[in-house]
Image (tube, rainbow over all chains, first blue to last red; front, side):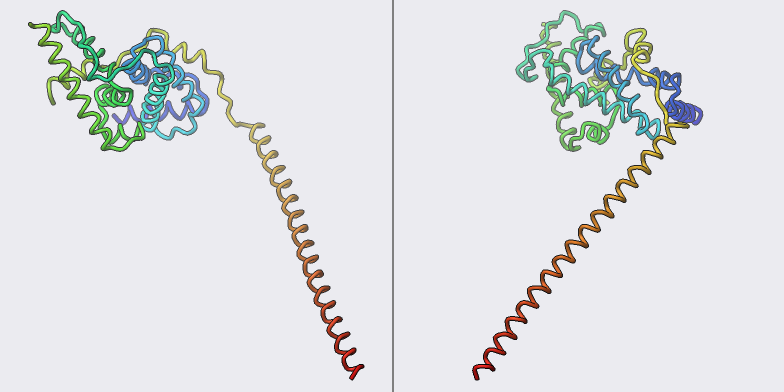
Length: 183
Length: 98
């Protein structure tokens, strides 16, 4: 554990001194996290990759402001989340409707995990932007509501109520869709 | 922890980006310029130049303020002297008629 922290510290320090190999190490270490936030939020592979690249370029230009490896993780989550939300708002990739009004997804078999995963992705995709990012950060990044509030710059109460409501709606939609298939 | 939350966790597992992601990021990253050697010297010269220019400007401003204050003081003194002169004239005219 100590060795890992010290290695991460070392890579950050070297990257700040202009060591390209050390920066590549930081990219390698965090690419799955940054890419997945964008991908789970936008559901568009090419856009998620482009956005993730932009996040790392932004990091490269702002490396001197990063103090510790944990600060780096927090910074990347914050920038990836905000950029994903901004991109979605700007581009409006597809017309969004409230989850309550969304039609039930058409599925044939929920026993197989890939299908269930696909169904959950479609349901999450229909959540409003902020709720969607809260769910992604909670279940992809295992972040506590207080951490999510800090990353998204919103009150803790808003995160908690949003998460509670999103989970209730998602659970209800999932159950209804599974019952519909069993009939 | 509910089964449903586990399902969400599983659906939202981290995924690796497409192969070659790191190379594509690194190809967009230019060489970092660090402030070493002559860059520090240039920065120091520029900073001292800015301080000198700033100091000169401040001294000029102080001189201008002092000049303005002196002019105001002279103006007040002049008006007071004129007033005193008028009063003396009035008094001397009154004593002359009496």
